[in-house]
Each structure stands twice: as C-alpha cells, then as structure tokens.
Amino acid sequence: MIQLVNIGFGNLVSLQRLIAIVSPDSAPVKRLVQESRDRGMLIDATYGRKTASVLIMDSDHVVLSALSTEKLAPRLGMTPQELTEEEG
Image 1 (cartoon, rainbow, N blue to C red):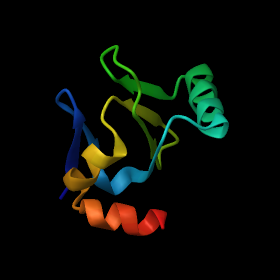
Image 2 (tube, one colour; image 1 turned 120 degrees about the horizontal axis):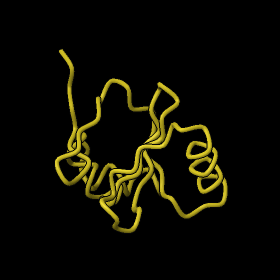
Image 3 (tube, helix red, strand yellow; image 1 turned 90 degrees about the vertical axis):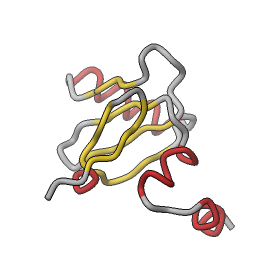
Image 4 (cartoon, helix red, strand yellow; image 1 turned 45 degrees about the vertical axis):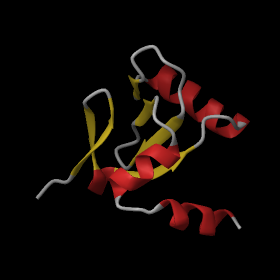
C-alpha cells in the first residue's frame, strides 16, 4: 500500500519514494535545486511562499515545500525529540 504524506497545501508525496528532507539554506542544496530546475525535475509545492524544506526523492525529483522539517517530522511519524537528538 502506498503511504502518502502531506507536504503542505494539500500536496502529497509517497513516503516510500522519499530519501531525505533537507534545509534549503546551504550552497550545495541551492545548487541541487537549480540543477533539478534546469533538468525539469523540480516540483515546486510552495504555492509562491518561501521554501522551508527540500525533499529529495528516489526518482531524481526534487520537491520544494513551504513547511519546515520540524512541521513535516510529525507527519512522517517522528517526534520533535527525535529531531533534536540527531542534532546534538
């Protein structure tokens, strides 16, 4: 069964196809987004809002979301405590 997760504004992505969710602030991620845009593999699900997280899919697609990693984590079944434990 396909599990879908809401990434904001009613947009859904397949949880099984999701590789990573990263912050859009670093230069390598900005480069990844631009390269994906150039190749036609970028999906902008921000509805014109500021990009708060970048989802990397196993299909080589890159998805932009206006929701932060902290807001997406509970939708993925993670607790806020699990997020902060990883940062330590």
